[in-house]
Length: 276
Figure 1 (cartoon, rainbow, N blue to C red):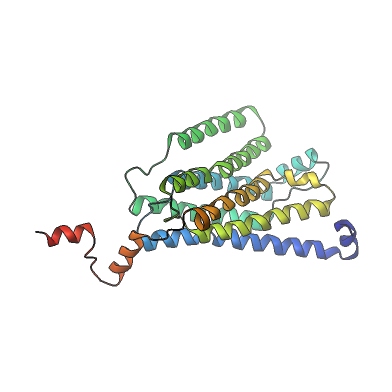
Figure 2 (cartoon, rainbow, N blue to C red; figure 1 turned 30 degrees about the horizontal axis):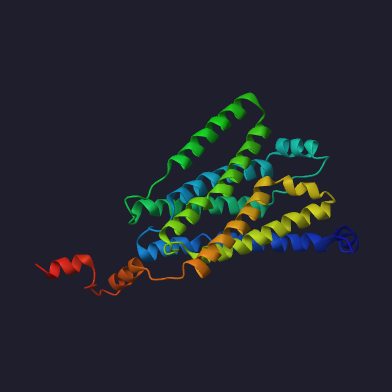
């Protein structure tokens, strides 16, 4: 039985399932930001966390928030989308809008932690991420100057898509170099993986219900984010549970001792003090 036939029998069934999928992936992806923030707070450090990943996250979600705002509220952009897509409405929903701003806020908090908490001298943004940032800003300026508002907003969606496709690479590479995932929250990955599956399922369901599967590409950011999340999360799960299984974290141990007021006599600081 096709989804279209099911909708003809139960007009609200497809919409209900889509809404449930949408809010469930929203919860999974939204909650996925908190474990890293909590881990950084407990360790009082961001060692083991890629700064490039944080930069891509903030920049990408800023673009995504603008894209969703324009498509959700602007009638002219909605009309232009319909004109270019055989009268079909765009698939940006309220949960997409809310998620993008929530994700941006939490990404900014995590990025702020990288300035407040301890990090190694080698941690910093790379030439690659700075080049990506400046080149896309130049591209945005050219598109906004030479083309329409609709194309400018759509350009932002591709900037976010680019961020989603590459942001995990520095973290995966950092884990490989350190042969460890300590400092990188696996709970973030598990929730992100679930959110990617649910987001992709909702997008395909909505497109199937409308009778236009090509609409899955009408929201390239959501489509790309789902695929990128699933692919990279599988890599991180493999790194954490198969390749690098040593979980010892001296920074977390030190933080726990300080919380309970217990001196760590094995630390270099206390060892030096005891030798005087």
